[in-house]
Image (cartoon, rainbow, N blue to C red; front, side, top):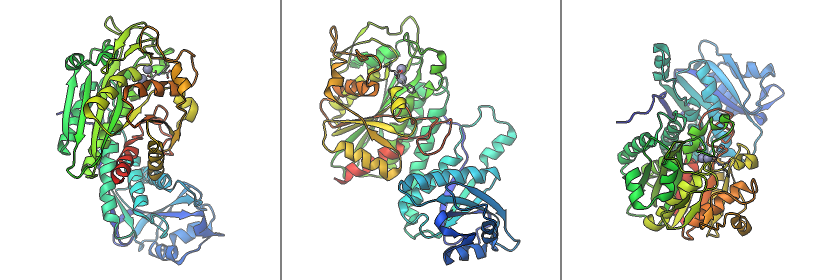
Length: 512
Ligand code: BES
Ligand code: ZN
Ligand code: ZN
């Protein structure tokens, strides 16, 4: 058994009203339009406030809370009210990007209520607040994600007790069909949580074998079939590219393939993830060494794809789905690969290595070729923290998408991203960019001839050489995997970005 570190138990369930919940705190979400000149406008909210002993009206009258986006105010309730205190949270103005905003509210609520150590929290608002099942789901994800913390490796007894204390969120006044959404959201939240625990784990803990082992147990429990190939086997199979990258590492490489094959599936889809559990850059070493900080997150693509497939299986979506992860380390030693080496990949194409730090595309060349040839998936979606240039292009706000060999795939991905509030942006895939990696002594070089030019697209054009003209989308998550604003919150840790997007893509492709 490989164990994950402990995380706080958090449940989110539905409640008819805010009454009789013995809540430590009732959270009321108020939009700017819910208030006017220090008064609550709707009778709906006035009714809620009367159960809170008029605490909201009293606070709002002071005009220090006006419903501004993510603003907060706390006040005590009179003794006979339904809760001890009220937390007001501002819903801001009505805007687009509703899924992301519901999730952001959840994140904020989780963080704020943790500050006063609440165990029982009831949420409410007007009927426009959480008006659909999707918004309830996003709120649930926000609450769960906001409670997430990678624990200190040496917890004090007090900290352990705090961590083990459960939090119960109740969402009041929501529609009757909400139970199904809460159940589904819990599945997604579990996958995001595991994804983040693997992302945040230090590289001496989250080795390729650790990630493979943790995820294999989760996958088997969800009824998936599981294959894990170690280094020796991969060498025999012809993974010449991946094994070159793994050459300098003391930790064995692992290639993981999960399969979910429901009997009602008509199509198949493969998610492929870059799984560098540490990227030092190799002999083209990351300089200054501060650029190595955070490179434990270079396995985020692998964590996303494996966890997404586990969730897709638990959600029983009617589509055959593979989860593929290429896990290894990019290190420096006598066996490490070098600049100038020519590598033979799984499909026979050759690569001349011109920079050992552009290792993700090398590892993925074998993984993609295997997915196209052996798994024969109809569509391939691949996630990787591939290029620093992606951060230059889109910052930490969204992922770049590069779609190939399909008239519809880009749209499918963009629509899915909008549905779940994980931002993506389509990037250029101009043929001329591909000219830059044409090789002389090998088929391709692993970096472009024009240094720094369209770096993210160059990576994408390299990868598409290995998918046998199958519909393929490369998603560069370098900016959003960790320490980012991807999901609307600044944080130094993992984001789990991509788990929801993958599930939504699978859902969309299962429908048509
Ligand atoms: N893992 C990095 C990309 C990266 C950089 C992710 C910063 C997140 C934050 C990747 O392996 C890499 O080093 N790419 C090089 C490619 C270059 C040598 C063509 C890069 O982006 O500098
Ligand atoms: Zn690198
Ligand atoms: Zn890398």
